[in-house]
Image (cartoon, rainbow, N blue to C red; front, side):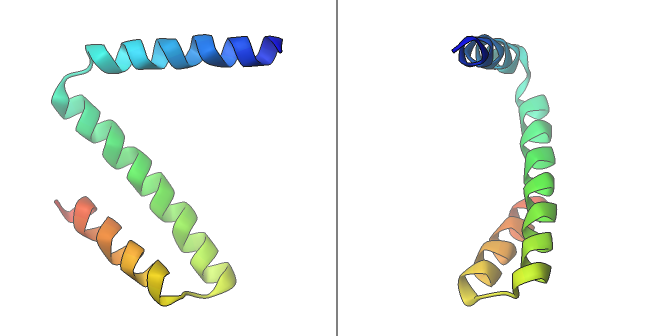
Length: 67
């Protein structure tokens, strides 16, 4: 249970720091997360092959990153 409370505290701090961020910083953080997700996603596609839905998701993520 202690770990859970620490997690809550950490989440609260993260939310607070997010409120202090400017819109530009938020967008950069968002893009960084997207890139990390995309790397993870590409690894899975390499491992398990790709389905049509995965390709659509990949194209969508690439469009956002291009923006």
